Image (cartoon, rainbow, N blue to C red; front, top):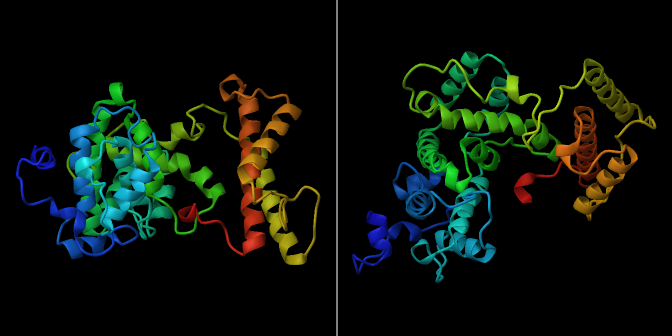
Length: 347
């Protein structure tokens, strides 16, 4: 209510001061910004939360549909202390404001759930025992820096309110977990292959935090006995929500053998026709069109339909394998040229 009155100018003279505190906000750690502003959570998040609670709870595709890029950059510049005419008070692009929150979280030098706990959280999420998952995720959240924990709690409250209107905005908790998960939890060293392999685990972790907010974040109540977010279900589901069969034991064994052979070839300088290593073919200047062309050619060669929903379970497995092969080739080609894997923070 206060935010709405302030935006309409009812209070007259004094403007909302949170936007123009000295110093940059984007790309600065949560702890540093909170110490500078003497707040529990960054003021930019408070402002965006108030805005979205007033104007964005029922907005279809919030956080999924991108806003105007120019407006987004102007809002970012405003919070970094630059003077311009675009502020939250006069911004009517709800999707740009949603994008501003995602951008802020994505550009944090240390993600909300921290680099330190990434591998541990992924490992926990892979466990099929829900009590084990819930108990250990709760322990990790309780070990977060205080400002990180406060911000996580604030975000959960906002996202749960948005999910309450999912019949109108089409953003249920699973959908919110998909679009926001990579901004909240990411590894220190990212690659396209790792993103693909970990995406379902990240989605499961964030969905659990949203659904079991009181137990996991507030530390109240008893752990749930059932959940829709465990990898016992998600193991055979890709990011598009299509069920696919688990890879066979022979497939996994073949992959392990190929990885071992690849490492041996790198050390001994050997090559083999079936290996991907050394310098795989990939057009790094036009990676998207190149990969799309390769995928289409493979679909035609293997007689697979272009629409995933029309593929048989066997064809879905083949599609997944080929996509992983393309991603692996991209990572290796990039590493061969530049000496390191691509960083998703620089996309």
